[in-house]
Length: 57
Image (cartoon, rainbow, N blue to C red):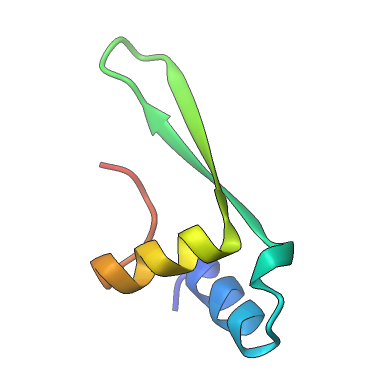
C-alpha cells in the first residue's frame, strides 16, 4: 500500500479526512515544479476514481 493511500484509508476509517491535506507536485515541461493542495476528501475521491495513487504523470 502506498503512503498516501494508507494515510487516507486510515483517516477515512477514523472519520478525520477533513483534517488531512495532500500536496501533489508536478514537473512542468519547462522543468519548473508546480503543486496542488488537495483536501483529504478530494484526495480520497480521486484515489477511488483512478484506483491508483496520486503521483502525477
